[in-house]
Structure formats: structure tokens, C-alpha cells
Length: 307
Image 1 (cartoon, rainbow, N blue to C red):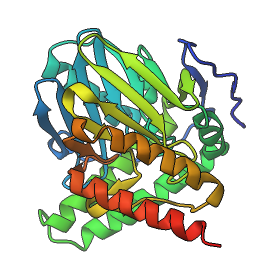
Image 2 (cartoon, rainbow, N blue to C red):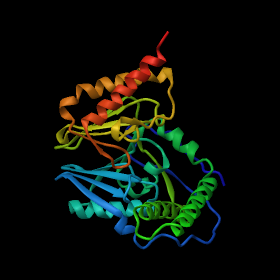
Image 3 (cartoon, rainbow, N blue to C red):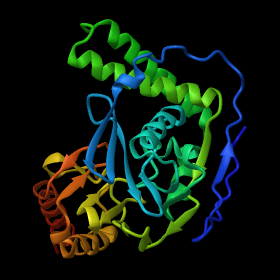
Image 4 (tube, helix red, strand yellow):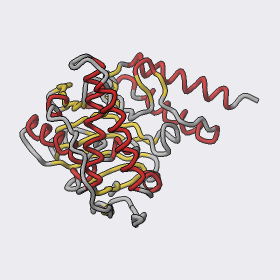
């Protein structure tokens, strides 16, 4: 059964837009490790900021910011059941559960898979998110099948590795993530869209915390955004780049490059209000990584515009 989407997502709409996956009943994989909780790590970046990572590597992460007017979460992992664990951790860390906003840095499944867990909050993303999520999930049964294949591959790999080794732990983490995502699609997964979208910029004031959102342009996806929190001197970049400034771009389009430069000018104006940069998978980076990325984009822009 093909999912039906409501694509009329407008600014200030406060009700999540979603569809229920209609899947035939089948036996679930029971391969999810009972060590899941041990694989989740919490890093305290400040009194108001927590970074929740899954695994020993940079597989997925959520950043949570506690403000006077509510908690803001950045991204929501690949699995709603796994994201439920993240939410419980965040509630314990801050001793509160007033989630105000969930912000999707881009629409890939490992960043929006747990959106439904924060359906009590306003979910924000760039306006291109709606079409991209719709496209990625137009065949949920195929998605589920792919998750199942990933689980089988990681299970096979686990058997060949020394138990407890670094590589074994990394593989266990991946097997756990995909097992939980597979099982979600067999039971209670709801593909939940952003309920508020924006085109260029959006500012969210939560009293003692301000979030400034800026559309970067088509790069890693068609919906990549930057999120700056001046009070914490924090910049969140989604999957645009990783340590060393290594870009996560999928496409290099001349027509989008003007937008890249506009976004970088925005970042440069904020230079004195950025100390920490967080990537979309929990990489804690520095200004040096950001500057390397800026250099890459400027070089790519010059090449695209050579006569």
C-alpha cells in the first residue's frame, strides 16, 4: 500500500503531518542487542547542552538544549524506539520533559527516523524537507527490506570479529541501529514530517536561548541548514562536513553555489560567537575544521565559476 502524504506544510502549522505505514504482518528480527543502553553515550557540553551519541563511532547523535521556554532537540536518529531512549536520557539529564522544538538539519532517514517521538513539540525543517522525505519513503517496504539486509550483513560480520574488540563494538552498534529501525517498520513506525518549514532564515527565541536557522543550499541534501546558538557560541552543521573540514556534499551544482557563499558570509559574521561546531553525527569540532570547510567551498565555488 502506497503511503499518502499531505504536502501542504506551512509556516506556523503546529500539528505534525504524518502517515502510517501499512505493512503486512511478519516475524520480527529479534537480534537487537541487550547492550543498547550501554552503547548510548552522553557528553555534557555545558549546563544547558547535552550531546547524545549512539555507539563508539559517529553513527548518529542528538543535541539537546535546555532553555527557559522548553527543550530543543536537533535531529532524531534512524529509529523511533532508539530515539525514545534518547528522549528518556534527555529528560533525566535536565529533570524536565517540556520539549518545545525538534529541528531536522536535513531529511535523511538517520536524522528524521525518530521524529514521532517528539510529536508533542514543534518539528522544524527547511521547506524542501517535505518533498525529500516523501521521495525517500515512497516505498517503505523496500526501505524495510534494505534495513533487513543491513542487519544480516552486520550479524555476519560480528561472527568474524573478536568479541569486545573496537571493530566488534562498532559493528554491534550498526547492527543494533538497523535492527531497531527494521523492527520499528514492522510495528509502530510513523513517518513524521516537519510541522513548520522555512525558506531562507528562521529565528526561535526561547527566553535565555536564541536559535538562528539559515538555509545553506543544496549540498548534502536539498534541505541542509545551519543552526547557531549565540548564547552557547555553538554552531550545528548537520552533515555538511566532518573533522578536518571534509565535505559531505553529494552534488556540486553551479546554480546552488551562490547560495553556499551567502551562507558562508552569514557564518563569517558570526565568527566571534562560535567556539564549538557540532556535526550531524555528534562530531565535536573547532573553528579550524569550520575554516577548512569554508576554504573547500570557496575553492569549489571558484572552479564552478571559471570562464
